Image (tube, rainbow, N blue to C red; front, side, top):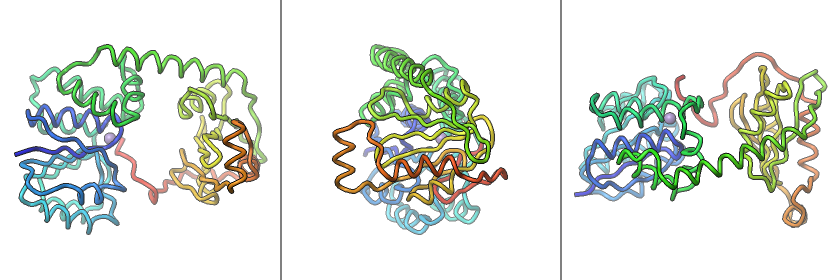
Length: 324
Ligand SMILES: [Mn+2]
């Protein structure tokens, strides 16, 4: 009989899956998902697996019924679920009666899984758990964390990394290539930020507009760098004609209202708008890399005019944050 791992798409999910694989000591299938698509991912799972391990995927309260139905359908398998996000108490009880559930505050799901199911003598397991912590707290202090994050951007990289980390192969040719790519991204971000001019919004906030189109740099990295170098309150990051993100800089800023106004969502400290370019704008954006559509200009303008609400407020409608 086969085993199955269902895990989150990010590096903590990858590390958790690697630890789950070490724990199973078989060759399980690995499925990558997220809280929003968990019920759909479970629907696709056929019955008959011996063990199913779910890691680093929280339960969205509005999916509790659908997930419960799937766990009941899959009750022939032993299901282990380990997560470190915030859950509704009622959901903990419901899922806890259908599987072996561990939900606890932890810097990463990987280290929580290792604490619960790992062998304390297993140095490889401890190293993988430490990578999970380093990644999910966004500390990125370990030598390869940024390279692993870069590599786990696509499914091939994630599958490779689950295997490699499970075997204890923390270095290697692939990781070297990812490191070089990350270095190029960092250099590109440096170039971008060195040419940026900080702006001042109507309410006196310092901000900058970063156009990532056609660049190698990662938008989150460039925004963080720009905030540090230019002492920004926030950054407006244009990814495409239909995707603009807002990231908080050094001081409290809430850009979520702007994201929500433009068909987006997220958190007060990181959120995104989804402009809807018409056909002509889409063609123009395809032909001209840095084309500013009417809505892009409008969003940039509104970011500069936004009245800032300084009270910290969390918005959980569009996702849940891990305990930190
Ligand atoms: Mn996590």
